[in-house]
Image 1 (cartoon, rainbow, N blue to C red):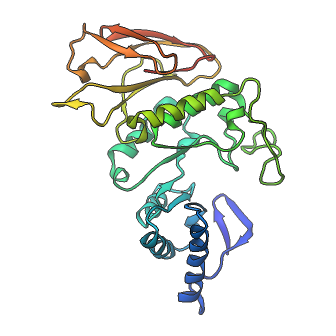
Image 2 (image 1 turned 90 degrees about the vertical axis):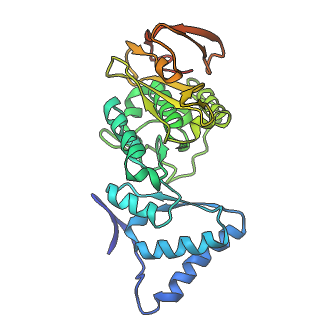
Image 3 (image 1 turned 45 degrees about the horizontal axis):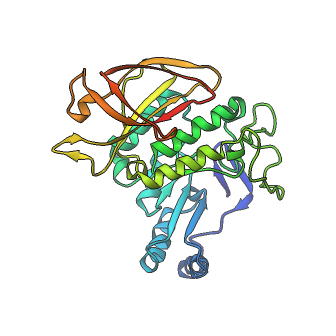
Length: 319
């Protein structure tokens, strides 16, 4: 039986027989020892390709064996499959998981997905890793949206989830597809050695640097579980807050990271939006101090209703 991830069938990969006559314990222990060998050389993170095509009892045993000796080891599940299976893999021990974020590029579908991850059962055991692209996935949004699309997806991934991933070349806005209608990269590193330059005109290296700096400095950006969405009256503009973990005083917030993104990489968008003054125990006409974390300047907002215009040249704000 080939390793399958419908509709794909990987005919270059044939699974071993995990329940054959010599499999238990010999094969299982040999596979475990491969992982332990790499751990002994300092490798502590393992991205497991298509783990759902192998038996779940094997993963539960093997991950348990490794983490009992080395609890710091991380197992990342690369399983783009049905939600039930993705959640089962988390339950049997995978530390992190790829997600559907890669294809969620509309405002409401992204909100619905985050709400599912933060308010239903998976919030207890599923750690979503928001990859903007992968060696196999060159999303159409990036292929057609240019530099603004790369900025948009970077800021959404880096501020919505505590875990975000960038595959080589994304920061340079590399998005040339294999062909029309193909969600893969041309001249992929899967098939050739392809050293990338460190910088390229029109890249988003400075955006990525900013996002990583803010994530280190603000614990509010290190989890997805604190995400709160607010009203922005435009289907192309998403508006959300991330309360700081130590910011609540008697149930009233004292600090929150707030993010606004124009999800349209081609056009300027503007909207009226609601500033959640009530979260800070303030009335609708109150003022509140704000710091623009990207531009570095401070100002005051006055009143609950605000208005903004976001251009593709600068499609996001972080306050």
